[in-house]
Length: 440
Image (cartoon, rainbow, N blue to C red; front, side, top):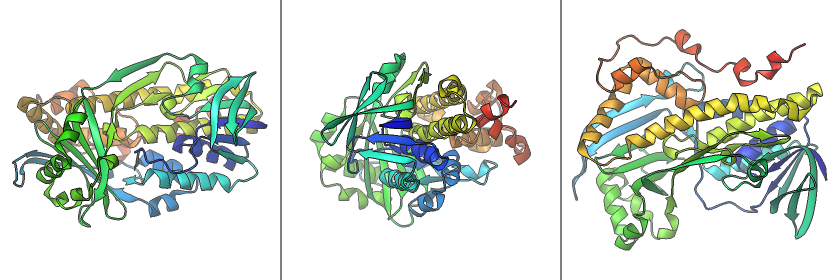
């Protein structure tokens, strides 16, 4: 088999890349090992930059029809009281609407829905999109991709090979990259449960020792993320589901009934967060995207978004190379030039967010509560935080900002204008620099 681009892995990143390439007349073959929906929890939060990309792919209406809008994130500090309603200490709301963009919200969409929509979009370009379901990518042999499909071995020759296989990536192994991993002192339990119709906002509830993240889904469901100490999972299971029932009820009484829909520990998934970032994204005519290249702490909800944003830049670059008859391997550096600094920035932002919730003592809780409140009280901090996590731009925090957030300096009263913050939104020239640097 011959193709322009071969993609190993049919997750959201690989499918977004394949759909983009096929839509621009690039022959793409994608090999995906799974033949049915995965029961494993994957990202569901689509950030504003990702929504902009999905709109350009022509799937935003379908995505929105399957999603639940999150325009705010609420941070609630409470005092947990056994068998009683919690005592609220502080409530802060951060608003996507502070970003000067038409993409003024995020969206919660079941992961498999997003995959299905992207896969169907790719199939609509049947001349260029070739999908091999149940195909296991085995690595490279004689300069070609080796795939086992329908009990047969197939060799696929391409001009570019892209690894979108996730954390275990034969493409990454073939590139001989260096991977630096960072582990954390906490794990998460995640499960979807019913929610009241009135429970519509994203919410993070914390005490000095507990953390419960709540992210509403369509169909009156909510994705819950409960923080536990690393290595504590076995002990919690031994306590029985009643332990979860009580914890959820005491942290968020509105979910007291819904949490009892959990009937079996098999529906509760253990998430072990860690991060890594490779030292290079391409080698020769090989490239990697998404979790093959980087894994981010889930605190900021960026993992799936980074994969789709990788796919957008790489897809535009490869399509441009074909249209301009440029050698792919000579231009892959642009993909790394654009994406690696942005990913590094968000990895660090997510890491700092994780540290905020990693320590269990009262003084740290007080510091955290004040720091989150300052983001709301000081508009430049508010705008920078939401702009950065949105993916639409980058506006670095200064030492002055951190002094305000740390309660050393008072909050500023002046609001950030749309005109001012637009200077920090990524332009088309910053997203796709080769179009401008290679003219003539």
